[in-house]
Image 1 (cartoon, rainbow, N blue to C red):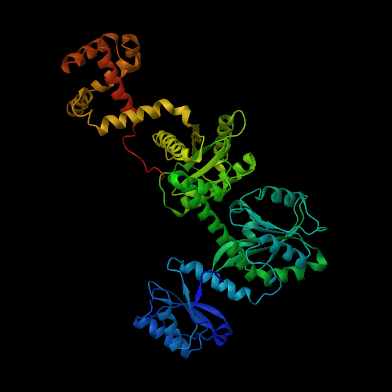
Image 2: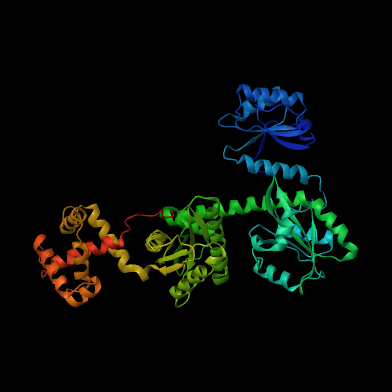
Length: 533
């Protein structure tokens, strides 16, 4: 069921015990029949009165086994308790998700009864699709709730149509399941259904796959015809539990691969000492250099279920586009930012990098109603230089993020923003200067601070006048047009500004300082939105 479950007391009698169902234990619930059931001891620890009571009652009721988390208890103590009550005890890792575990357990119990495709290695959805296609006499595809094709059959001689050909080539349904009427019919049914032929497409048999109430996806079979249809529908219904088990294992393997990928990419970007080791583990070709690309979604709020789904869709989009462009992909979701390592082969790698992030931005509408922001750091000649490229990508991403967030509205309908680090080098460098001024206290009680305080107290607009003066290079007519006032009004305001704050606007050094302070202030977001980390 799960490779890292430990059997505390494996013995012939325990291993041979039949299993009928899975039960999540609650000591407050009325005790029901638990014969041959696996019991999940949620919230209990070895040695507690509730745990001892559970083992006693489970043993007397002929339960199949109890699953518990160790929480520091040694395996010897757990084995001793299990032997004392003559009951099989399985130990789950402390970080195991109980909800996921009960889904796996139920799928395992139900799947064990379906032996039609039991010879397929768990999680191999292509082999499972071939087995399903052989049993039902129709080409099979396995699709997840996002419309991604997770596996498809390759048996020769079975008829297919253009839709099947396109979706297996792209590994993606043409229309997302959430907006597809056929998928909605399948999801609404507890059993396999017939989807009639439409236009030039062939009819299909389809089944929603669930585990523990969670929708994992669906299986689609090209209709084998009148003679074989009923048998195929029944076969689909019989294999549903095992399909859920295979899909859960495939997802677990995918999740593990994503976590490992993320850990190695994080090492590359954060730990220069072990960067070469991580590069070797990833099979990374860094001979021509690499650049770090960072991607995020401009949302008014983060942390919701939909935002989590969208950022995972973004990871899939980035991975897909990079695979198409570079024939390989090294991407990972770290925090709330998707990273990708872009190769730098050829004579114009930056043009390729720009095209890739622009293409990803162009597909933003397929994963979210909010815009994508994408930024690429400078080229890192060696893997040890990747931290600098990542820092540049994040600086550019943050700059684009705050610039987007400053626009009116909630983000819906805005266009995506993409760019390379060098596209925004000047404002990014000015932001660094502004941060240096703030950290060292150079802005405390200088002329700009005094003007700000006066404007706030007296409701004047001296700072806007100064900004217009510096932007217009002191040209009175240009200032008047910018401020929508008469030339004489501008002359009066500039005179009062210079007199009231003792400014010598003819001094180039003073003008430089005033301009630098205003520019860095304008670039720095005042009300900072939540920037993905």
